[in-house]
Image 1 (tube, rainbow, N blue to C red):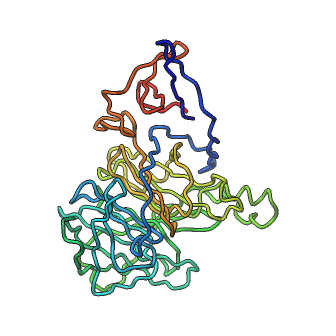
Image 2 (cartoon, rainbow, N blue to C red):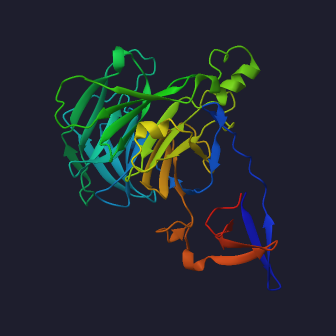
Image 3 (cartoon, rainbow, N blue to C red):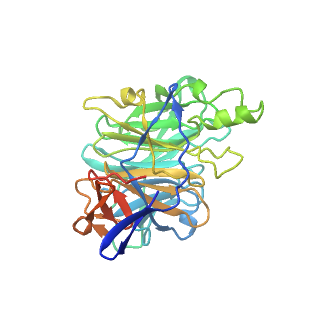
Length: 377
């Protein structure tokens, strides 16, 4: 809920706007997931439709040229595009050649290996679990300069899942601490699974086998086997976390995000999609962290075909949808976190303290916050 203030006769009065619909709760590992209210959702702008940006399925914040976000489309071009973090400037293309196979590029992430920044593209979409041909395309992240386009020869890691089982996947993340890639499968009406692969520059053409890490939740959370047995059973299935579409690990490895997009709902306005957050303990593995109960980002609002997410740092992450029109770019930010000087165009120095019902709040840009920076819902 947004709270606006009106200054009348020198007195600051606070009134509430219409209450937004509360996001649906999520049951995970047999228990209701707690909401994380640290992040505020900020609309950045719509990305203009271009061939290279149709159906954006992966994004990664640039580490070589801060202030830009790399983007790749699902199945429309042989290049990636850099867009500034205001969503307004396309600072041009990186063409990948020789051709590495363009079908189903489903996610992108960045990471550091041997002191160098790399970009990874997951070419592992397999909607019907029928092809069994999966690979990760990777290359050193280029600097973003004045040149409109450049060409890079990438490397490729060919992989399979344990036992040669075929999976569809749309989510990949890289951990700078363990120097591992993690892939999350996309499953209808059942739990998604996580697999990992140690990063190496020496795999060559040899087929690599991923290592199973864990399941995300339990089948009982979703209502497996009941989805076609009537309305009540269908609703049960929607309430579980399945159909993972994007993931990322923060640069320091301490925060993990995995989101889903439940586009199987009969009413697409129903909010049955979540962004899950795990805060990783010091010296804890990614595997152990993901086996714990996550939190759900309270401010997240379902995006049509929301298939991309990336961390800037622990205080800021971005999302964009796979919409083939002009998809909106969103930023999620801790409003009063250390190092965040401007929120929605309001400087910290311009925030005001206001008293309402004998409680002291911070006010900025038509929102009220608690003194520790949490937006009042």
